[in-house]
Amino acid sequence: MTTFRLERLNREFLREISLLLQSRIKNAQVHAAVLTQVDCSKDLSHAKVFFTTLDPAEKEPTLKALQDVAGLLRSCLGKQMRLRKIPELHFYYDMTEERARSVEALLDSLRSKEAPTPPGKTEAS
Image (cartoon, rainbow, N blue to C red; front, side, top):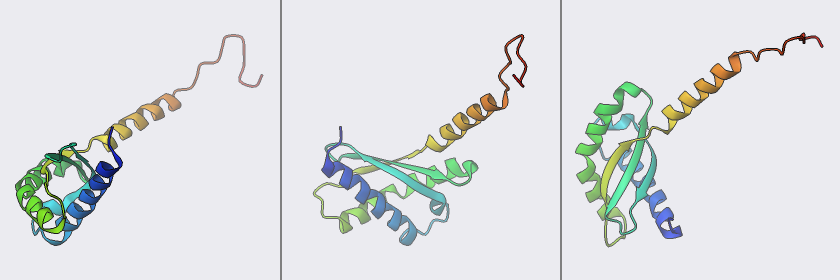
């Protein structure tokens, strides 16, 4: 269970990391990432940063580029935020959208199959 303070810090980290990726990082591959969520540990030692990309083929190169700039991002966060401890950033690809697409495709396939009519009944009756 996350506390109100931890939720607020997660939102603040998400905002600050997004701004840093747009303004301070010059790597073009990093700009393909769309950050979706930050989940900090209770002691602020680690932070999971979830991202997605518009093109699923860019997932691996974007993850590598984000891992390469994690130290620089942490350093910049330390200068901008007034916290005693800045967490280590760990980047993960967010699979939520892909799971949602597969569930939606499954539901569409179930809708497209017509329900069999019981024997002895016609569709008009």
